[in-house]
Image (cartoon, rainbow, N blue to C red; front, side):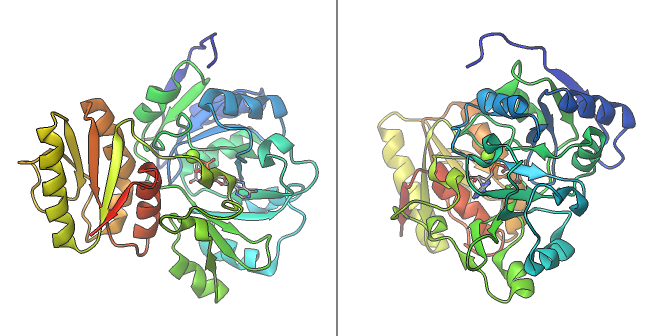
Length: 355
Ligand code: TXA
Ligand code: MG
């Protein structure tokens, strides 16, 4: 952890029509090698100038991020990919036509000049054009591509508002631009187009079903499947760490809705009898668990988009409440629900109960 704290400047900005002043100030700080947190349509990002190795190193320091976990390069337009990637395959062009700007990150062969701190020494680079007006305006104002992981302490749930960013990084970054809540709530889909066939390395805001419409076929990295212990590890280095995790131990219960509810009631009773404070992560259209635990709802399970939007804030809420243990109801593993379940299973560090 960095000893010498810096003064983090908090600036409110209009999310739809961002004012020029804050964008220019953020852009200037990025150009000079500083760190700026900003909203995107997925989660808040922590930006640095891609071309400035020292600035990129500060990201790893501020987050406590392992150096072997590469960063996503954010651009404000396709022309900025010149000099970052070796070529844009036809499939990538078509995906960009369909989903950029938006929550799709594409992995392509990297040019040599992309600093190895960004790629963690891989010969590929992850690129994405976000759709949030503040993100786009900031990157344009900076005039350079912006490396940006999620703006949280490594291992904690990603930030979906500026308060989450300050809780983790106040005193370690130069500016946070507060553009209100991020939209999707879970990170972008990471799609590898540098290998023999298109492969989803991280499910996210764009679903495999949507990708299939453009690509025909798309694989999903086995590391994304529940319970993966795997040979060789995941292809996306970031997927191997415990992630997205609140401080309390989290247990995910998956299966039919009624069996899951019964199991949660049963477990909550058992843990409370041991004198533990039990949190329950459920949904507004679930049964009322309040008699057996401290409930935080994350959206409606019938609408996985609403669950994604509220998931990380709910996990952080349990930390504020100070529960000892969280029991989480699984949701259907479909559409953006796939990203939700991926994050929940990872937050649980593999503690999944099937009923
Ligand atoms: O929605 C998002 O993608 C957010 C916002 C801020 O844009 N960013 C984000 O970044 O989630 P981060 O650093 O938290 O996650 C990046 C993921 C990691 O799992 C990393 O390992 C993977 O992308 N990644 C980056 N470059 C890669 C590469 N060349 N090959 C494979 N995986 C890569
Ligand atoms: Mg992250």
